Length: 231
Image 1 (spheres, one colour):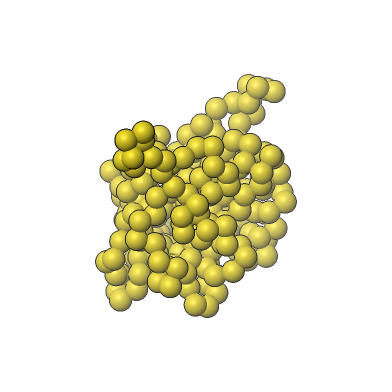
Image 2: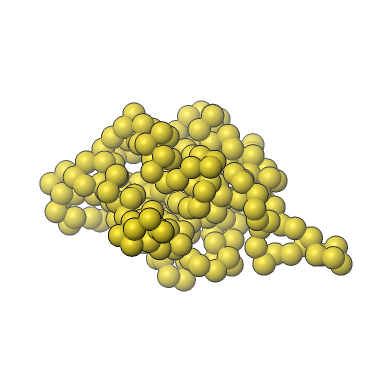
């Protein structure tokens, strides 16, 4: 799926961490193998810091067991003021209420546990595919690759997905079917989809202007009031 991905270029040589001066985005994929991929846009470069997946579980378990401990350790500022610096880009299906109660949905669970605001990702595959391909395109922003992934255990499975475990199937005639990646294919397709939602928001698209993604936070007072944001 990720044609053009090169681990030597797109995985950093040294660790990178998110910065409180910019909004922090989390791309989400739901279902019974939920995934979350965390990143920021800094100076035109999409940076992915961590990726999480929990097989045979729900979004609540993913948050409590993996994502929230990481945020508290690495980016506690993102949870302050009701998560004013946190943006969740979700699989649109996560807005659907669960079978247990009409008031329960993954979207509501995310907001209740983490705060922030919700952006629903693209339903169709082509804009999600284009966001990923844009990130690994050969162009460079200010002498840097458009995408860099934090090296280490926290992104290992996402790198594996990008290296070929997230893939298209072939039709009976031997042609590659690009209408969508192979499913089911957990956790690789789930991590890939979560990253596609994140990158679609970070890098912009038909419905998401890049100018609104790289928002620099000026002061804590302005965060609390959700105002005063500027490039």
